[in-house]
Image (tube, rainbow, N blue to C red; front, side, top):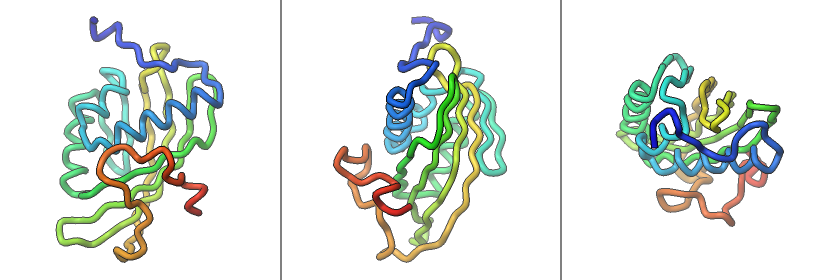
Length: 159
């Protein structure tokens, strides 16, 4: 398959069900902790704004994620659909992580995604705020990797 033929269903226009499926697929990729896996959901020239970093293209995104996960250890994220229309999806997310000395944080954020016709994200804009927490305050306790299907989402956790 040619890189220009990449296809990542479901594709726009999104229904509530297909938007929710897309959100869960993105959450699963991020919980893999593998930048090479995450970047497959994005176009070759995808544009990102994440915090104060602006990235364009898969190679820059891989570098951003690699730096992020060196700093943000034991990363666990839950994403939840906020809204959708045509080729756009808005997501709320929360993730927990600790730094290299063991200080825990809960990061709250919103993402706006714009998709191409093949179901790849061509634009991603994220706003994120970090809140220090104590280890006993953690709410994300599954093993590394995909969040179990029976694990509560953000609404159920009151986040």
